[in-house]
Length: 89
Image 1 (tube, one colour):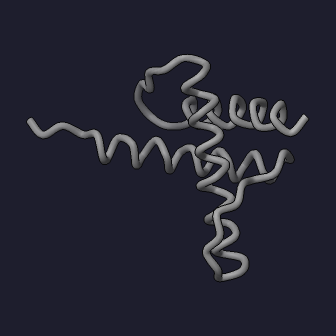
Image 2 (cartoon, rainbow, N blue to C red):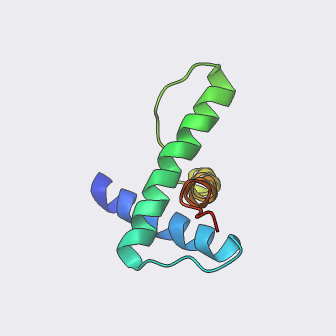
């Protein structure tokens, strides 16, 4: 059941982040799901760092606040991806 929760959270967070972030982001359903899962890890780690002051890699839970944290993390992941893959003209 935990794997199913990760898939659902990843799909929801990735789809919402792609809808919020300006511009066109390519990728299918698998890329969207992976984006959401990476966002859950980034967001969960940042929230843990802000709450406890210690760095530990954690994930967002499958809840409404966890979805919000995962969307914020996915937006950060999209931003970082485009910063590192930007081509110089």
